[in-house]
Image (cartoon, rainbow, N blue to C red; front, side):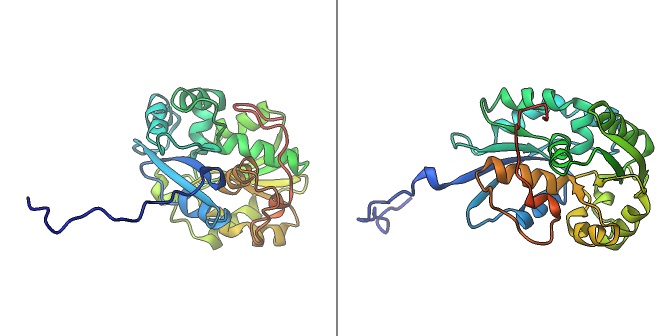
Length: 265
């Protein structure tokens, strides 16, 4: 190989300061089609970097299949921007966070990235609903019934009253990502109950972020979605306390308090 046309530049590279960088890690399923786009919609990419790792996963979306991701999370976390400081890592699967457990997810990721806060959609949603002072919630999921039941049990166990839950009955998260926004809006409005104080739309595959404003307009109630709640928590953990982009619901106007891995206040 000839090197006679290659020479080293006389310009010594000047490196930017690391302190100005807000970096988040994101672990998504191999089949995920929605999470990255949604976080990029809500978070300001002029000041935030999102570094993504994918974890092996095969449908159908059942509790048994979701559980299989647990031993893979440490390796996925270890691949996220090695050597770079992260403000937080988000594991973007709501149903798996219920099946595996928030604390277990945090522990698995923590084995690769110690002292980095770990955000799950379920933990983020609990913080979000608490910030909205909503304890009675109506729920919409794209899952099968047997995947939705543990979701209801999870929120009930953590002190919320699920007034009713509707599900679309899908088993492939790639199909969940194709549910139209008008369908999500109409189904969420139908899932609402008179005594519900807020609506929770579960699943990071669901294009629910795009439906928030219209659902809030039609129901008069705050709406929390998996990806919206994660983006809200990440923004606050990243020091973006004044981030209030329009169109993503009342939640973005609220502060985050007392965040702890695996548990919500």
